[in-house]
Image 1 (cartoon, protein in one colour):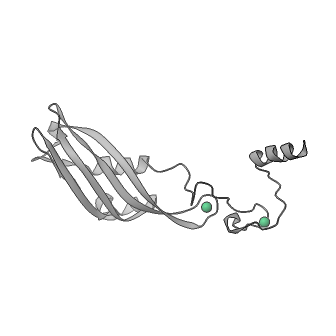
Image 2: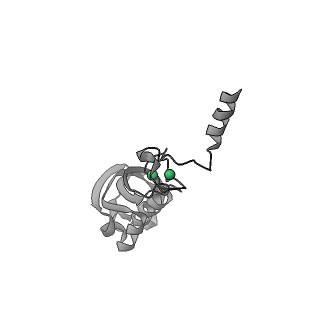
Image 3: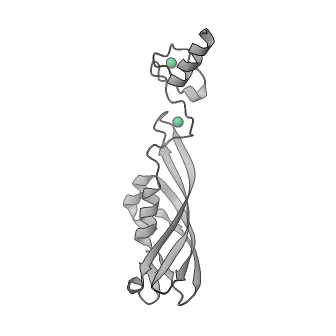
Length: 153
Ligand SMILES: [Zn+2]
Ligand SMILES: [Zn+2]
């Protein structure tokens, strides 16, 4: 359970790293974020509350939604949140929930091995990132169709 030290009337930096499952529990591995998570940040006492801000660095392993290959990606997530002073116990703030929420909210809708992943051929299932399989593609990319039209004029 990561907790960060507050500083009365000033800023207190923090930095720590730990295994994902230690920070968030075994079930968190479903997100595909594995290995060590690094967290850098600071706690600022702004009078009425504590502001906790910083950056999470992690590594994600996943199956590409388009071509189904295994891929890994380094991710950086920025965070900033306010904590009521009553939430600090003995000058420590528990940031587990905050970090967990930031990581989950920061995941893309689609997991792609690269932004322009070409996916699999709908005919033969070949990975089109590795080259053209030679099949006639029934589904023509609308952007390519426009180019075809232009050539015919
Ligand atoms: Zn892919
Ligand atoms: Zn094919």
